[in-house]
Length: 250
Image (cartoon, rainbow, N blue to C red; front, side, top):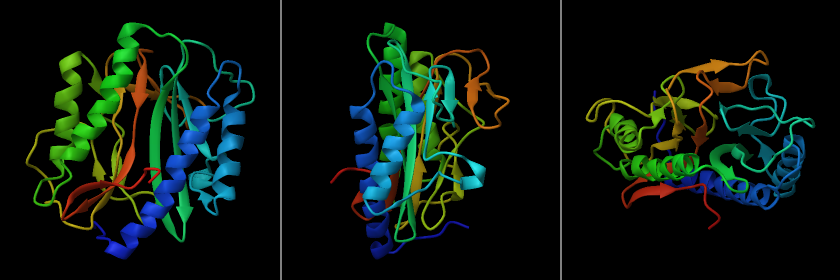
């Protein structure tokens, strides 16, 4: 069941989302050669708690940290580690969420460290652009599958592949609510979009095939062919004025 949010509830998610957005910005300031992914996690956790919120990921289904850090062929859910240090040429997917006043927010961004191959730079740029292609479809009267169709039709123009086994999701008082939102498919299918729906839209796009594998740690998801992967995400609300991004600094 898709839970519609009131305008007051959307404002609460927006307040949570601002902290999430500011946390990603704070992490971005510290993306540098030699820093460990655990250090980034500590920075994020301190920032979220210092902002009066709770890290949404820590302890969620047993996850041990406050952010996920997924590098290069890692798609999502990378576990921060003191032994994993960033190096030039990496692309680094940061996924983070906050809980404020009982409401969740969720956002992700892929950072680039130093010079990278033009095709991988293109992957990051196209993935980010595809997020907004999907968000544009979050309008009253549209259909749920319009979102994933817009993402897929955009990224495949460039030879990239949306991951098929992972999805975006509804969000509100829970991290994951109905509906699931694939990043592929035909338009015009699924539930009709209504005012008050709140989604986490998150294209996960591979430079190679869409197939993925889970590493032995039980969390980290990688591309099966070891191609690069990028990830961007915003929490958004369907409103009478159009899509409203809730994970922004303002």
